[in-house]
Length: 347
Image (cartoon, rainbow, N blue to C red):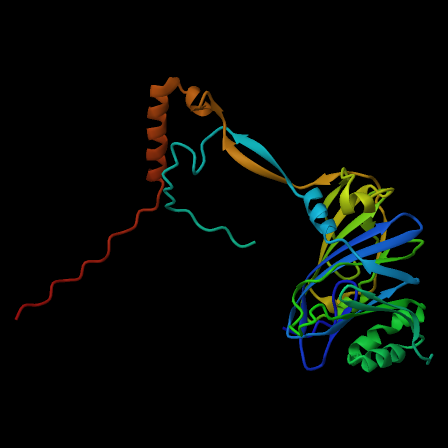
């Protein structure tokens, strides 16, 4: 388990003597044309009892705790639908091939300088949240060092582009367990809100990751959304696109005035190629996307396989079934008998 200097939309910095890894990350971006909201929940593990999480933001942000139920509602909203797909001729598992005779089958292949300006400081549940400005990454490094979290040199360099663009930072001290046990499991979600004339999801710091990264992102807007570029990863895949039908709960509240939900996933086999932050834009059309899982069933009429009725009734069906089984077995490869050793000489 390596130090988690990079996670999807920020950086995690543990105490130098400990290690922490982000094993899961769920993020929601909501954009109404003027304001952006990001709700993020991290799942972590490792030996660290305390850690700091840093996220660059383009404008001054307000921070509050998010509602964990939001992610359960989102998962339900984008879940695949099940549909039955019927086939006419029997397959493995269907009569008369339901004897599970698998001979001949093979497995499928696996698929400037200055100090830190503290804009605000607040306590949110078990989190100590500071909203910071800095004209130099060294200022942020000094602030973290004073709080027991030395900023790695690589991360200090990676923050320079944000300093050049006059972004601000949200720095969060994570210490969810007052008993001193290591951080572990899903942390409370954090809900950030800031002005934005176009939606952006910070990804630049993920280029510091030493292992392949994956992004899962929910986007709520007035229309279907897409990423402007791939920023060095594979082409994003749309898992769901459609209007939110939920009116209640955390999702219903967040989706008010931004009813179109787009769920994206993207892989980054080589994080060092990540070239910037994800800029989001309206897609060419609000084409809906819904994953479908097909359940295959043999078509039947009054409980009798339809194919059997086409060969002259039940007696003929039995004969046809026997013929099919015999034909199938005749096509099996014949295993030659083992060689017979010559008899040992007598005497």
